[in-house]
Image (tube, rainbow, N blue to C red; front, side, top):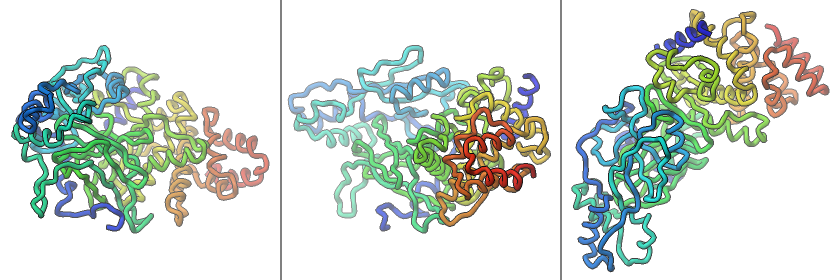
Length: 530
C-alpha cells in the first residue's frame, strides 16, 4: 500500500508539471476578449438596494401613500456559509441553494472565475454566499452568518394586487443607494430600458459538423445583481430564459455543471464546477457565439460540455446498454498537459481503498481531499472542436465502464496506470503488453477507444475514424465486430467486473453471441495479440 501511495504522489506531481436569433460574435464588444480566470478582485462595499431598509425608503419615495403599506417585512435573508467539507457543500446544494463564492454587495474591480476569502486558510472551502427564503431551515452543523434582511418583491404574494409599481420602486432604490450606474442606459430614442427577462443563446462553432453555430447544450447560465439571483439551463440548441425579470444590468456567468448531471472543474479552485464570467449585460438578455479563436478555457469547457451531453444522450437512447458515467461525474481540464488520468477518485476508487488522500499528493492535497476528480483530462495537444470533443468522449466512456466494472476493478487498473505513468520516459500510462497489470489497461482502453470511435461517428456522420490504433492494444477489434453486426448496444454491456483480460472477453462474446462465432474468432485472430 505504501508503495502505491508513493506512486500516486509522484503521478500527481507529473500532472502539475443572424438568422438563428442570437447575437453574432463581435470581437470589439464581446466580454470574452477580457475574460479573466484569475481571482475576483473586490472593491468597496456597496449599499444593497434590496435590503428591507433601502426598499422601504424607495417605496416611500415612489408611492408615498404606499397603498396602505407602511412597513416591509423581509422576504429573504442574505447569508453566507462556511462548509467544512464536501459533504456539507453537497448538503447546501441538495437544499436547492444557488451558491456563489464571493460577496454579492461589493464592487467588482476585476472580474474572474473564482474568489477565496483572505480570512479562510488556503485549502479550505471559502465562504459561500446565498439568498434564502425567510422560512429556510438551515442545515445543522454548517456554520453560517446572516448578513442582511432583504425584500425581493416577486417573493411577496401581496405585491400581485397592491397596485404598486414595484419595478419603479426597485429602480428608485438603485438611485437612492448610489447604484444608478447599474441601471440600463437610455435607448437611442431617449427611452429608458426599464426591465427585462434575461434570455438568449449560447452557441459554438463546430465546423466539422456544420457551418452554422451549434448550441452549448444543457449548461447552466447564472444571472445576478446584488442578492437578486436567477439561473437556468440551456436547451439542446443553446437557448435559455430566466424565470424572473431584472431592472438593472445583470452579471452573467456560465457554470459548467450540466443538466445531465456532470460537472467540470477546476485546477486549484475549490468549487465543484468551473465558471466563466461573461460580464454585466442588458437585463433583456445576452447571446454569444464561441469559436476556436475565443478564450481558450471557455472554448474547451463548452466543447467538453457538449461531448458529455451527447454521451449521456447516447446512453439514454440505448436504454443504458451503453452505460452512463456515474452521477456527479467530475472532469478536470488541464490545458497545459497532454494526457489523461481516469482515476475515478470522486467515486471512491482511491479514497475508500487507501490512506487519506491528504498525505499523498503534495501541493494538490487540499484540493483533491475536498473535491477529488474522476478524470484529469489533458488538452494541450487538442486545438479544434473535434479534437477536444473526441478526447472528452474517451473520458466519459471510462466513466461508463467504471459504472459496470466497479471500484475494486478500477483500483487495479489505476494502480497499473499510475505505476506506468511514472516509470515511462514519455509519461505514458499505457505501458507494454505483458507488464504486470497490463491486462486491465488493455480492457479499459480497448473499450474506451471503441466507444470514442462509435460516438464520434454518430456525431460526425462522414467520419470513419478509429481511435487508439497507434498503441499496443487494438480497439479496432471491437470496431471489426461492430461493423459486422455486433453494435455497441451488444458489446458495451459485457464490460463488467469479471472481464479483466482479452481471453475472458473472447469467451464471453462467444457465450453471449454464438451466432457470431466465426466473426468473433476472426476478430481475435486479426487483432487479439498484436
